[in-house]
Image (cartoon, rainbow, N blue to C red; front, side):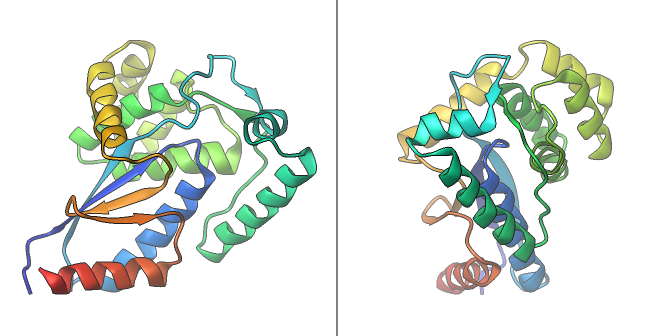
Length: 214
């Protein structure tokens, strides 16, 4: 078997609950193949709410309006998400507000350059979906960066400025041009696509199949 690491591009948004489920599930799969299949996991930007202003929006009304469903259906969907999260070890808390995530993507881009993208992604998903914190707030981004082993002051400076804007926009265009319209989307070796918050077994099987086919 070719021992060159599989390239895993995890296209996702901090605002996406299924991305939190998908990452937790993928990490369980990676633990199962550790020592057998080397991987290079990196995170790619996607914005579910690219036109949202800095004030954000109230969650239930926003989701009901966006998807044309009732508040009751929003609640039912959330219950399913909470259950799926619990199954893979991700604890969803109450999240009353939806926020723009572009600043988070810029800080995540920097974290990837520093080799701490996975740690910051985990921290931001937990802050947003578990604790209802604003992932656009410089103080939140600085605190999560510190948790991820990064320089908090540097993270805050990035959040308060416009550094890495061009780089993140370029990556967003890259994936849009390749047909990514929903997240999470895992792209393996730039060829194989796995969409949605799959269970760990599905990710594991896919990784084993791709590794064996090289």
